[in-house]
Image (cartoon, rainbow, N blue to C red):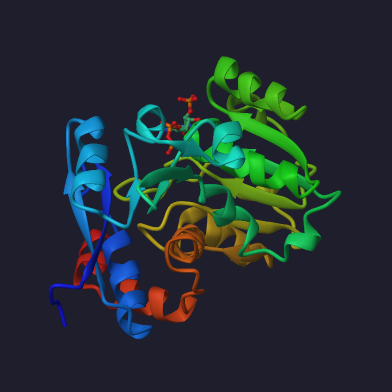
Length: 276
Ligand code: ATR
């Protein structure tokens, strides 16, 4: 029940109309009996957003495109992981102070057994914000990174930060073998309506690979369908999204949410089915 003690959490972004974060966080507050509500706020000005967090005593916030970097200027403290990644997606408001975190790297690490990443060859497709967080997480666990990206300059930039190899996407198209244990797509390639596209040719997959995709509309992307047909273990975009959200929830409440409740809340949402 919403009453005078209900605590407020929210997401800031532009646009945020299609964000799935309210669904997973509200389902988790409800299932754990926490008197809190999570709303989506679209804004043009992230500084004003942070002023609102302070003045309205909003307990925690998610931050999404295009504010993950800009918001850092308006916080009191930044967690070293977020500092290293160069972006914040989570804010915790405690004792009048705002601390920024980045849980996007957990999206790639937590669905795997983190101990299995050390010494593995991990191919990250993309070199944007999501790729950066994923690369950070993989490097921290001792994985060997290979960055694949369309633009060479951006791809080499990310690769050099993590001592990683780099292959331009147009060269990968002509290759007939990819030396990787884990493949993680962080680009939007394959997202509806272009769901027949894959960032990687199916012939480069082999059954020992684990294949992950950040895209979750559709849930069964062309990349994951090719991977399953090859016999690979797969991790879909909802799992990756839920893991970054679960890490946010833990920062805010100290509690581990039930991942199945989060997933079912998303799958049961009419909107999700409309978006696919
Ligand atoms: P995000 O924060 O979601 O990672 P981003 O910072 O805009 O978003 O990065 C998007 C990444 O997806 C980039 O690496 C981009 O490649 P470029 O560096 O060449 O721009 C990649 N990407 C997006 N659309 C793509 C497409 N159609 N084909 C190949 N790569 C694409």
